[in-house]
Image (tube, rainbow, N blue to C red; front, side, top):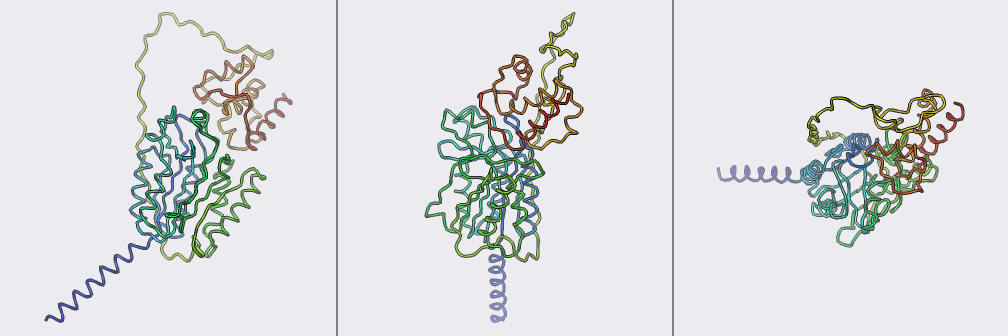
Length: 388
């Protein structure tokens, strides 16, 4: 009887140890894609980048926590869920696509809800990358992979420029206590600006998705191929950057028998406050026109059109069908709204009056740098104007 009880206890202990071992060796990932910004320039591709990256990581065995268009609460909830999976994991991946900003050498990931007026708002309205990495270190995974597709041209840089804010993200130097087994990848060189892309995904995420699921491909070789793809697709305008201290060979993908489902963090819907009704005057005067009519009596674009004549002219390469139906005045405004998004002052009084009616127009410079997509769209619109 005593022998039977001892054997039962022995097998129970083995079962408990086996369960503990099974939980101690997962692959976990946190994927965040923020594009629907409310107070700064929205981005088209990050939610797509995040959804596609989450699906790809799930196929190669990572337990994925996904946050799309997250406010700070959703990003923190996602981080908490991920850290539970990441505790003593074999490998973890953190992927972020969206706006990021550096101030005085410190990097911050920007929620869609952020309203940042100055440096003091960063600690309460943004997610500190230093803090995120510190929490991941405390989970003690064997391999840590951090992928940042977050160096888009960010209007917050202009807000924070007096507080030493600069373009892109700051280089992250690995210290001796946490460097072992760590790889940090930027979509472009530190301090530089990456492209959002004109397709479904950014150039960087497109290249990652093309190579990440290749079985047995060492991670250094994988990022070498990603770098070559991005250099080619951006015509040398963007160079991904990697800082790593991986010990030995490591491949993100291998033979995966059990693909993992994706856990999506719910984002609370934003409730819009309804304005109080204003008393109406007995006689409604006719508003004065802001613009001079052209000789052809073409009407100026009306603000009822969703604030932009060509809403995606900053992120997608336009074709002739996009501009063929526009009249000459609309083409002029469409061409200049590409510059207006970048914060360019307008010398022309008509242009200044037109763009000043929109809350997103915040001029701050005479010299703007256009992306390759924007330059191509300006050239297309100019050709259409010449043919009017």
